[in-house]
Image 1 (tube, rainbow, N blue to C red):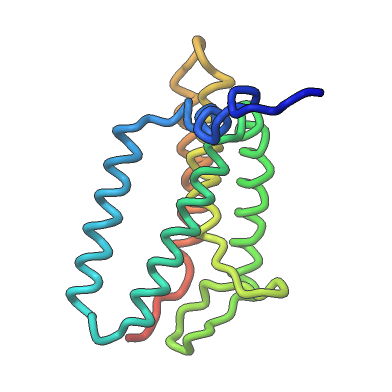
Image 2 (cartoon, rainbow, N blue to C red):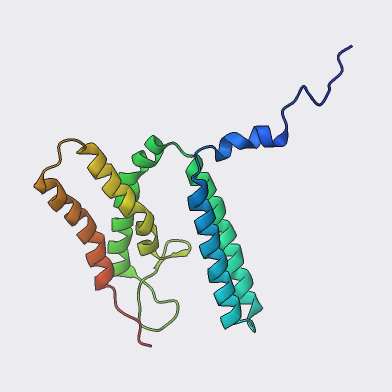
Length: 170
């Protein structure tokens, strides 16, 4: 007869600890402090609108979950997503220039309806640093002036498309 004792199975902390091994604790702490300051400022500026504050807390928790999941991904996997994400983002920006909508009716056609309403420029906030990191990683150890020109062009294309979007009429 085998008796399971508490010593046979690892504790919850022993099972979860490897998930946090690669985190920079100081960076996570700084991020939490910045989020807390932002939430405090938002609450004090508009405490009469509790629903908006609750939505912001929800969004921050969701972003924290995404942050945690992405941190678990190997760097090679993230690098393999750089070119497809960048390409998709630029294609969506071109589609926004052609078929963009204005859900707020204030003149800014920065959104695209692809079954749900998205703002492609937000995706490029993630895709652009990944793409530039991919580009410079491929050129590591042999960087020339032309490589910086190409990186500037990689940056200029989506920036130009975003700047071309009409501004809101507020």
